Amino acid sequence: MTSFEQTLRAINAMKDEGVIEEYAIAGAMALVFWIEPVPTYDLDVLVFMPQSSGPIVSLTPIYEWAATRGYQSDAEHVIIEGTPVQFIPSHNELADETIEKAETITYANVTVRVARPEYLIALYLEPAAKTTKRRERAAALRESAKIDVARLQDIMTRFKLTF
Image 1 (cartoon, rainbow, N blue to C red):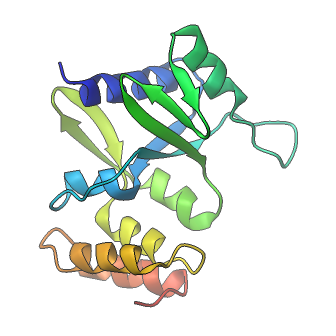
Image 2: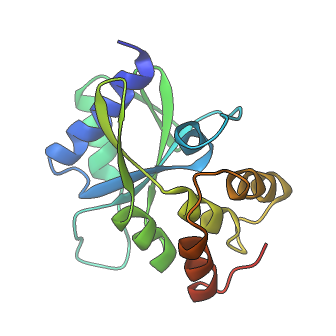
């Protein structure tokens, strides 16, 4: 079993144990599921956290869960089976929908939820995240045969995004 496979199993365990409500693999590592992979440092995981009693979302339950299993933290990352993982609470309607509409894929005998390529494109094109590197990733995804063009157009229109 690869360390990445073990990392994905650990994320599923977090969900099964109620530490996170739902998730979607996003960021550069999500590209592995749709197109050619690109170099990246970490695994980004968009998450819904269990409801808190205020507007501030705490990742403390994730760090506590990790610590009880011997996983170390390094800045904003939890090192799970050798993979730096950054848990990103859903921060807007696009992120919410990305998680809700994530594709369930089997990777090395592990069922994993991955942001659909149309949503990855939209996330890359959000004004706060729109860098040259992310625009290039969005373009590579857009050229992929795995894109649902109508879905992408709908997302781009509803969230007022442009290339």
